[in-house]
Image 1 (tube, one colour):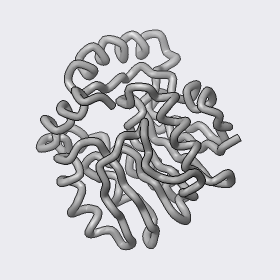
Image 2: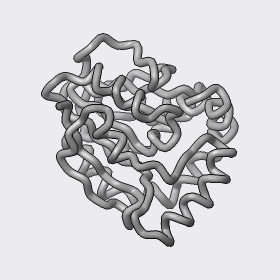
Image 3: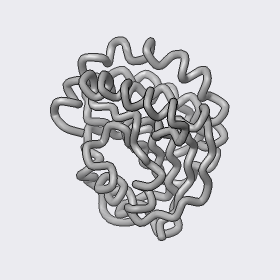
Image 4: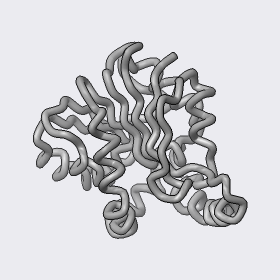
Length: 201
């Protein structure tokens, strides 16, 4: 993410939960199924206001990062209520301040539509993920349906200006470009939101 997108998320932090409220109700079941695969030491990239925490399995040791201080302030009550340990840190997905092979699981939720250089960000995730670890992504992606694709491109003109969100990225292709093997790819909402499981090659 860039400084401008950080400011964008700072601006919308107070209304973010309202804007995403409908999505969270719709996504609860597929997120819960995806997050059942979380284990060991976990890195949660792009925590935002922490809406997804309620869908995490209990008892994990989680480091949650985001560039927006205001988003993390909103996430703090959810982190404190989690039945396990969540440590919140300000950090850029392009420059993860962790040694190689630090985590058993990395989780992202609707964040790689905002990372400025998504392939580089994914390469950083691969670096800090253990060789036998798992990448679990719940992400907006570009639709293969021509009509939906056109709508997403038009919506992106607005969302990019507002908060740096690209709704028309081919995230599955970017995962492979970063050196991961895609183990599972499931549609969570039409084919524009996917639950993806990937492994380091």
